[in-house]
Amino acid sequence: QVVYYYSSYCKLVKDGAIQCGDPVNFVVPTGNFGDILAGYLAYRTGLPVNQLICASNSNNVLTDFLNTGTYSIHRPFIPTMSPSMDILISSNLERLIYTIAGQDAKKNSELMEALKIDGVYEITPEMKEKLSDFEGGYSTEEETKETIGGTYKSTGYVMDTHTAVAAHVSRAYRDASKDQKKMLVASTASPYKFAR
Figure 1: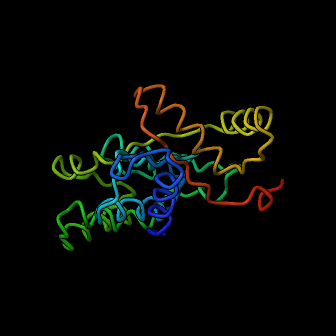
Figure 2: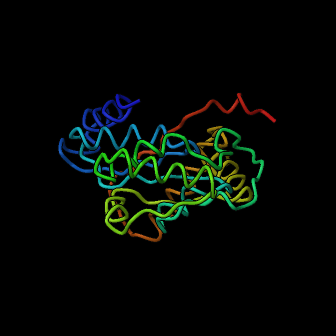
Figure 3: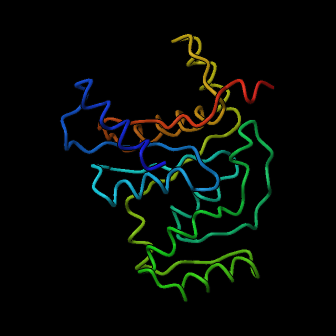
């Protein structure tokens, strides 16, 4: 998935939307953290990324983790209209934890064991500082519906539920941060896959 980030960046340059070297933001709808981890790897290998914005649905365990440094599954599980994101244990997050722990496999194992036994872990302040490349946000079911409807009314585009989560989070991020850098929203599913 790393190539998606380079490819979309190159398209922005080719279309004249940015100059080569300009940093951009990526907003990625995810529950398992894999796609946004690919964005992080693209950034670590040289792609000019300003911010990676993790977009969650009502199962916002990742948003809470990125904002607090504490990962806890002690929360209600909410079936949503964006089912690919209905996850309380994000298996790919372990790879990021390993990286921000300084590739310390022992520390990584300790945290994953705490999650398995206690359902919660807290990263160190030093590790938390290394999360500054990420922002977390989430969209409620109502906000997701409003985003789909509003986008369709204004553009005629049928947006899938997962992309709608990211689109809502991108607007909320821009409103809160006033960050005007180009923002790419990862669209990860066909709307027809979730017709209901």
